[in-house]
Image 1 (tube, rainbow, N blue to C red):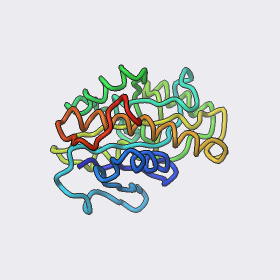
Image 2 (image 1 turned 180 degrees about the vertical axis):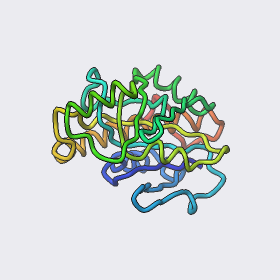
Image 3 (image 1 turned 135 degrees about the vertical axis):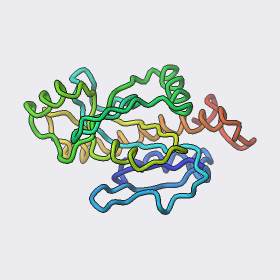
Image 4 (image 1 turned 120 degrees about the vertical axis):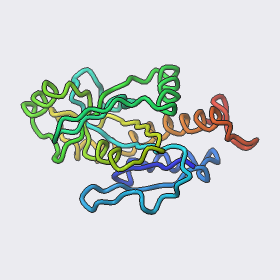
Length: 208
C-alpha cells in the first residue's frame, strides 16, 4: 500500500481525481500531516510500501519556475541544519521516472514560518544551498521508521517575489492538476516496477 501525505486538501485535489479516473484510488491511503497538531503515522497500516509526500513548495533557487514539478533528493532541517540524502530503492525508482519525464531534482528545506522577503529567501538559500522550501517535509521524514521508503514530489507555488496565498488562489487548481498528473503516472510506474499490477492497472501509454 502507498500512503500519500499532504498538508492541505488542495494539494492533492487533482491527484485524487486522477487516481479515481484511472482506477488506482484503491491502491493508496491518505494522511493529512499537520505539524501544529503533531499528526503522525499512528493510524497508518504497517504494510505500506511507500510514503509519498506531495504538495506545494516555495522556490529558493531562482531558476525554478512557478508550476514546475520537482523531485526532492535531499532534506534539510533549519533548526539543526541536519541534512539527509534520499537514497532508498523506491527513491531511485522515482529518480528514473523523473529522468524519463524531464523532472528536475531539488533539495528541500523545511522551515517553521512562511518566507515573505527576498532577503530571508537569499539568506536561507546561501546557508542551506536548498532549492525549495516547505513547512513539513523534514518533520514528516523524521517520524518514519526504518521500514519506510520516502519519496516527495513538490510543485513550485511561489517565491519571495510574490505572495504564496494569492498565487494559490489564482493557480492552485491548475497546479494541483499538474501535480496530480505527474504523481499518478509515478504511482502507476512504481506499482508496475514492484510487480503489484493487475490487468486493470493503466500503463504509461494508456489513460495516464
